Length: 80
Image (tube, rainbow, N blue to C red; front, side, top):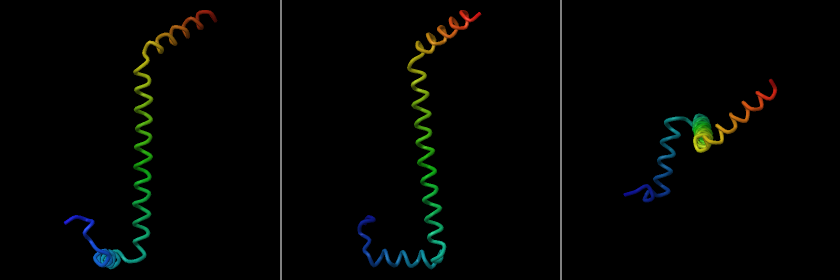
C-alpha cells in the first residue's frame, strides 16, 4: 500500500489533524520557513558546485599557471 493509494477523504482527514495540531495561523508560517530552508539549501548547493568547478579548472591547467607566473617574473625583471 503506497502513498498513491490514499484517497481524497483520507487527505482531508490528514489536513484536519494538521490544522488541529498546529492551528490555522501557524501553517503558513511553517510553509514559509520550509520554503526559505529549501531556497537556502539550493543556493548553498549551487555555490558548492561553482567552487568545485573553479577548483577543478585550476587543477586541470597547472602548465598555464607556471607559464603565467614565468611571464609575470619576466615583466617584473623588465621593469627593474
